[in-house]
Image: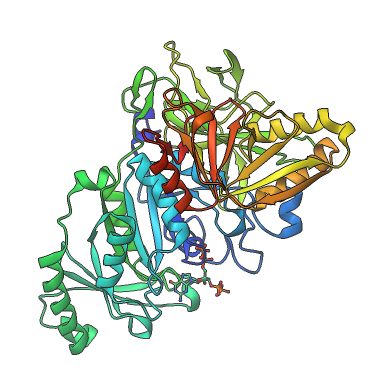
Length: 533
Ligand code: G4P
């Protein structure tokens, strides 16, 4: 018998996976699919042979560079649960979309390289998770390599990220001697064995209680003694597993493993599914919209992808469904546009292909054809009560460039092009404070977006531009802009005042020190890293 809508929603889990490049995010994702049965042999999803970014090749620039400019969503089934993983692209393709993806997830899995600890990109993504108070689960990866001391790794997470940790399991050995993990709640030892090279097939595991007389034999006397010592120390020092704190994003359950050899992947999935909840309620201007009680369909747009099919110059708007059921071709009310729209060509990403979906439920992500009407943060709903979901913040760009036209006759196309691209959320556009449209400053989260801008202006709008890099690395919104006189803000000599397209004043800085100085010099000035749309 088919599931009811409530059952379908109840079995959904939607999470984002975050890490610094090379910590093993792709490998771990692939292993989730392997254990979920979505693929038979690891290596087939984002295998290196057919390029690890094989998931999308929608834009020409991607093909030229062999990199992915988009973030993708994968869906798979595991033990009756329907799981959506949102990938957060790193490397040069790090962009504001990477941050926005986190707005569509109900929790995050943070992958950390056991030999490196917390790295810069993880910190950036982590901050956004904290802002949203979503649960953060930590998977300490690459235990099959020489790892940092386990206690030091936990200390690193607590100190650098400022979140409490609670190890759910504990590694036994590391490097070539990585034998398995000890599960604290059950006191079971899981001894892993690889059954194929590179973890193409699921690892074999032997489970034995740590209190069993044969436990020491199974992992070796020395490892057993060491484990018992560490566990005693840990039980005395580690935080209790307080699920309220986990759900508020204040305490991170920690797991150890090796995505490459599959060690610890399945135990992680099992615990993770028990500790996470079905799709969470979302804030709107009419209170919280809870998928468990709101029957009507509602969704918000968190990403707009242009030119996925060059022949049609189409745009795809990606939305997170927050309540109810979606059916292909359904008519819904677009709140910001003020009219009904038909959601056509709905698509979902499955492993390495896009497929057309007929039905989707709260928790799922779908991409629909966008004839140029949607903006980031827009709400769509069939509810009579036409609420709007809370907007998506604007994230601080870290790279800035002054844009000028090669041919000044092309001004009109140029303004149209940059405005359109900014509306899609690929770049942020600024003007000199009290200046005009003569000078445009563009801010991006990842430098690749400059190339995307140049490429798209040339190819779609027939406009050539010059980009002059500016030295600013930090931008701050003025939280109390109505209370301060921007004219009189007295900053460091290298501070620059600009305005965004909505006329909000912002400040650009070269370094953190200048931000501190400016705050010191201007009593009552409140600056923030996230802008409100
Ligand atoms: P990312 O998506 O976070 O950027 O990382 P990715 O999974 O692509 O992994 C980066 C590199 O680390 C890959 O090696 C991958 O095989 C390796 N790796 C991932 N998980 C583990 C692990 O648990 N243990 C070990 N030892 N290595 C791991 P590469 O050299 O870039 O590619 P490859 O040619 O070896 O596949």
